[in-house]
Length: 264
Image 1 (spheres, one colour):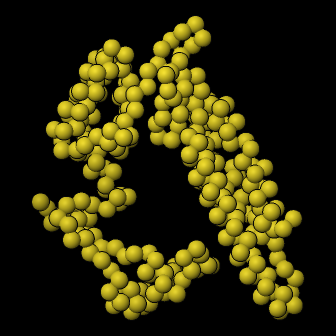
Image 2: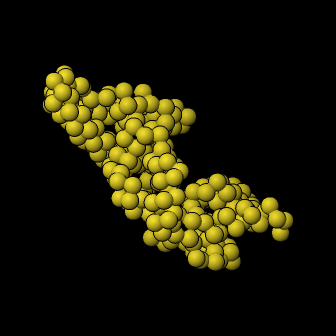
C-alpha cells in the first residue's frame, strides 16, 4: 500500500474521539447551549491543557471498523457493496423491476410471482459478503392495479417517505421528531431570553423580545437547510400535494408556540 494511502487508512482505523459531555463539563460549558456566542468551544491552549492533558481523548483499540460519518465511509461502503449491487440489479432488471440502495437501506421492486425468489437471492448474496439482514426492519408490500388505480396491502416506507399506491407522504414519526425539536428549541430560547432580560432589568434596561429570526430560519420554510424546507423541496420534486398538506399547519403551530413562550 502506498505511503499516502496507508496514512489515510491509519487515520481512519486508529481514530481518536472524546465524549462530548465530559468535554463540556471540563470546559465549564452548558450542555444545552455550548456555543453561547462563541465561534469555538475553546482555544487551542485550553484544548491541550484540559482535554488532551486531562486524558479525555480515547483511541479506537479495535482492529476493524471506521467511524460512521467520515467522508470516506460512504465511499468505502459503496465499494464493498459494488458486487452485490451489480448482481441484484441484473436480476431485478431481468424481471422488469427496479433496484435501489442508499447505504444500508435496500429496495427491490419485482413482480408478485418473483417475491420468494428475490428474497432468497438477497439473503444468499448478503451472506456471501459477510453481512446480515435485519429481519425486524424488513417489510414486504404488495401492490396491485384495479379500476381505481394502484393499491397496496400496506404502505411502502423508504428513506423517510411513505407511498400508499396513490399518494406520497412524509413519515409521521419524522414529523413528530421535528415537532419535538421545535418545542425544545423554543423552550431553550425562552429560557435564554429570560436570563438576558433579568440582567437587563437589573441594569435598568428595557427587556428584549425573543430572537425570532434564528428560530424562523431553523424551524420554518424561511430557512434553507431544515426539515421543513427539505419537505417542501421533496414535495416539489415528487409533485406531492400530500406532503405540502402535511407541512402547511406547522407554520401556524410554530408561531403559536413562540407566542406562548413569549407570554403573549
